[in-house]
Length: 339
Ligand code: NAP
Ligand code: G4F
Image (cartoon, rainbow, N blue to C red; front, side, top):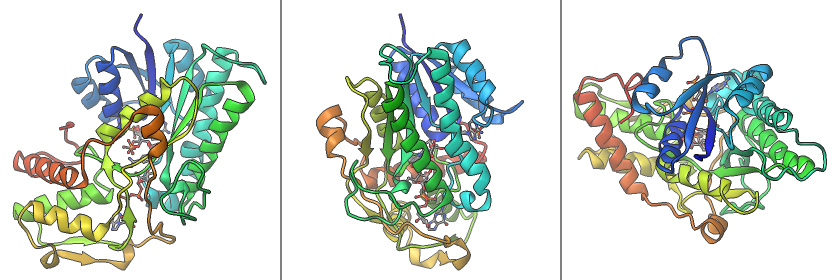
């Protein structure tokens, strides 16, 4: 019988790639979707016609219990979150509720539905994946960051993710649940939300190239990130869930680039000189910045056999080409079907 997966955040970047990957692996895939008429759901249904939908919201405990009861999943992937770091200062309480407390509600739904009790070995029960983040490392205490590096989150988002991370560990230890966290570093794609810097840059380049804009306004160009391709990273999520033991893993490329290098590469991919177009804007700087993030993915390579497949330059070129195509076709990037 096909394994059944329930994905929260299925309308997001990672949810779409993970759904595709699990369908390819022969899974029956369900997505938890919120709202009465979530416009992203109709696009998802058109593209992922084999995905089934169940209504629910990470803010609503009852809806999560009902969803787990209805779907009876073998695996739950909790990708739903307020995921844009600057928004977490503007709506800190909402971020704590969705990104932090949402993890508790999902774990409780699984615990209640699978009858896991304190101290019992809940083998054979529902497996749980938590989308933890390198933002938890924040002001890093060492470089590169491993599964053992301490956390010093720098945003309400990072703090909420740290809560969800520790809670996932705690449910594993308290109830014997197969509950794992993937500490994923930044991963991008043509499906990335337009507010994140890689997509903002690839779209900006495409607009300038096509004569639709004359400048690109950005914040801190000196921040450094470990950027990989989302399509590679969802495979790591699945490998963690099929591992013999529930453990947490760092997932990244092990290579760091600055926002400035990202900009240079993206403009060069379209044959443009970035210095003629990029304007820096103090208003786009953050109240507390994460200066650098760089993964040490040795454990994932050794234990899961996971390796990133797409390089930084290939990723940047893929995103610029995709946005050039999208805009040339007259599509609205915020409302486009996934490329
Ligand atoms: P994304 O594109 O922003 O997607 C977020 C998803 O969360 C959307 O499907 C959204 O659904 C859903 N959501 C928001 N509020 C919700 C609520 N109250 N109840 C249920 N669902 C809700 O994020 P992503 O880039 O795919 O990232 C997936 C997960 O990985 C997130 O948890 C993110 O924090 C984490 N993460 C991402 C990265 C990265 O670099 N991408 C790195 C580390 C960790 P709607 O359509 O309803 O808005
Ligand atoms: O693309 P970003 O907004 O991603 P950020 O803050 O690193 O967070 C992403 O990755 C995390 C994993 O580490 C996820 F957990 C999280 O959900 C999200 O997916 O910003 C990257 C860097 C920052 O240092 C920011 O200050 O780019 C810098 N930046 C410079 N100018 C900008 C801009 N970021 C954005 N979004 N927009 C700018 O104009």
